[in-house]
Image 1: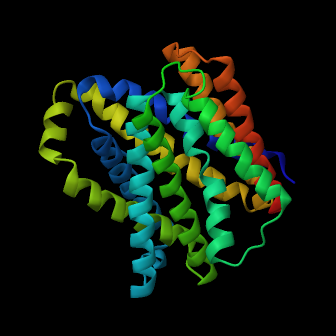
Image 2: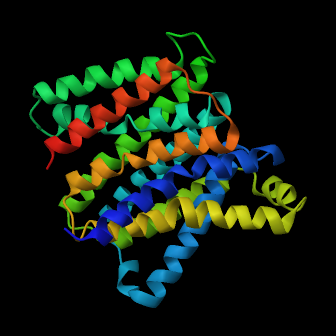
Image 3: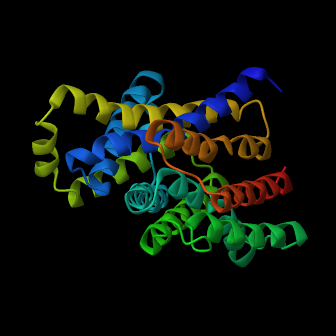
Amino acid sequence: MKRSALLYIVLAGVLWGSSGIFVNLLSPYGFTPVQMTCMRSVVSALCMGIYLLVRDKSCFKVTLPQLLLYALSGVSVFGTATFYYAAIGYSSVSVAAVLMYTAPVFVMICSVAFLGEKFNLRKALSVVLVIAGSVLVSGLVAGANFSLLGTVLGLCSALSACVYNVVTRVQMSKGCRPMSATFYIFSVMAVISLCVCDPVDLVQKTARNPAYLIMLIIGIGVFTCVTPYLLYTLALRDIPAGTASSLAIIEPMSATVFSVVLFSEKLTLASITGIVLILVSVFLLSKSEE
């Protein structure tokens, strides 16, 4: 197992976890969650398109069945990002990030229900832990800063991520190329975003402080999407998927650290306990898949 692969996973997790930084910096300018999703998807699609033009133009070739699968993935990734950004606005970066990270449990449930995977004691324990952790993280028990809408949006983000993971499994089983899939997923996501985000309003808001905001717009695409995806893909060449999933736990942890250090968000004992329970749940699931 190469050390560089481990480093790639850690860096990918930290970059994914930095999404909240960009959301907090962009929100004061009035950008909506859908508009931030649009920024991320358009920049990502352009970057991936340029990359494929230079490295492998054959990745642009796609069949109709593949395109339909990519479209479903694009819709789910659009939902994941939009719900996540909205959850941050109604709760906090740490709460939204940890709730989104319940996605592997939803994936497991769907895999057992629809893909014929076996349900065992470890998976049952993971479900119990993630439910308990979600209740604690949301603030429902402690009653501090509890937002029902924020919690629902965070879980919707996780459900959307679950759909993406399940569809991706189907794609890979049908021989879809990862780079091709990623480009078309980002492209579908960009088209949906542009149709619903009021792009004229987005441009007008950007014009208030163009140099600074364009830098943030590029950053949210490059640093929270394109770069971590490429790092994660490179790492999977040298380490098992289960190990990669375990190490990717750094994502919600880094998001929480960023929220506390940069934005002075406060964590209660209940929320810290909830975070630990959810991370243990995801870790158990990833170990069961090795």
